[in-house]
Image: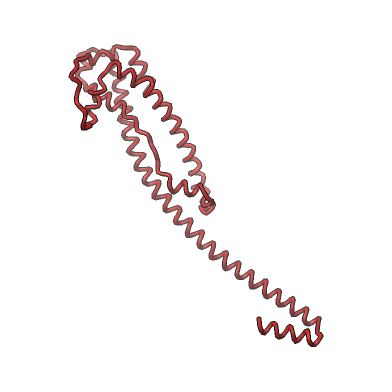
Length: 219
């Protein structure tokens, strides 16, 4: 820059305005080229940084969804047990006492009321969606799947809320009135669980149309 200043001052002192003008234009071009090169290097560096951030995001997201998948498998196993137990109870409806007494009804009821909700970890995903980090992910397929994930979770939540409402407002009150919840809880291996000392007819509910209807709605 010092050399450039000396040249420009000399041209001006010699009244060589046209040469000075050409020199000034040349100097501007050099500055513009320098800026463009600097911007290109900066863009390249930024691109590398974003690419690295995108890779880290995908890896973190992959780890989070692996955990979610294992949790989902566990929830599915528990809810399959619930479904199968409830389904078996419906098959005992209307059967003779001798057939019903061959089965552990209290254990079946306990398994039938173990509703388990799937609550995924979404720390990484919420971080991505809360800022502009979603743009760092270049894969269109991943973005579409994340959108479908939100839709699936909304459907799951709505379905679970319907089930849980029916469970709490219809099935549990009926079981409270006609079975021993204490005997059912005994099969949960809780520290406080003991069977009721009261004698009651375990097979009576299987002759009740209301029980049949509630199990049908529940299942």
